[in-house]
Length: 316
Ligand code: HEM
Image (cartoon, rainbow, N blue to C red; front, top):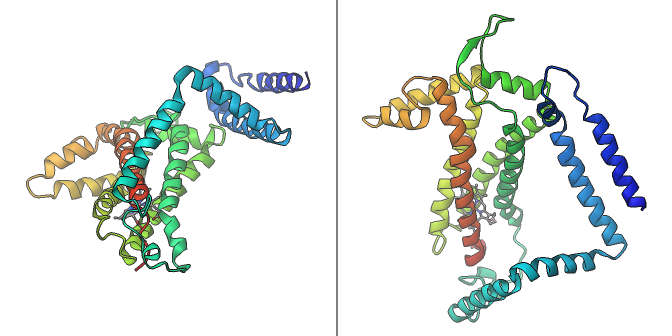
């Protein structure tokens, strides 16, 4: 009863807050602009509080078991899990009976070295890059609700300045959208953080010699991931279509067109033409929110699966 009342109170408060502030803006748009972030935050908070409550009252195992039972009854998941486990261990133990999962044996395993290497903290850099990627995905989804990929310049009737729809949508995010500027800042700094951590991760891999047999394929995949990361940064930098973005676009376009023979084709593929136009932003947007995330996510999954299969290389 008590819980019901609390839920009703929260819903009531939200309904009050959800009243539109201006008559001109459609209700749904106003609600989205103002309350998407608070709702996500409240849902997460609600989730954490619920789990905490269940944990404290000792009901958590029962709830997990009941939920699992509900799902398993419908999808027979336990059969697929045991099948996958059987297959996995049959492959691992047939090929590598002595070593278990790690292939080949790491340095410490082979020589039974009891050592704590002082560069172990650098082994977290790949994981940190992955963490930054997740943060970028979440904040990017939020920004995507409001960003408009419109690169055509039009004269602002009030100020007489030339601006684009893309730039105006960025202004909206920075000034009107609840927590918009924070989310944009988190997206911005996570992008810098990811570029730095991916690069340092690559240096760690190089200096401990982890790129050698049998991890050559992962080194090559990693090199492609580095390019994907940099390209993510570049396409994102152009999206606000402000002076900085436009200048960076000009430099990139010059570089692309200066490639002998292939130049115009490269400019066409990456910039949507040999001039910077509204099409450039459409192209950058599609690369930034679809092509690169697709390629990047697939490569990261394969990259990390290979680390799982091959194990971590110890410093030699
Ligand atoms: C999106 C970028 C990347 C992500 C998310 C990522 C993620 C990871 C993770 C989580 C690991 C295991 C933990 C660790 O060693 O830090 C790893 C290992 C590895 N990564 Fe990356 N990585 C990325 C980019 C790169 C780059 C740029 C290279 C090199 C060109 C690279 C080459 C390797 C290699 C060879 C290993 C195996 C290292 C070992 O066994 O000690 N990765 N990566």
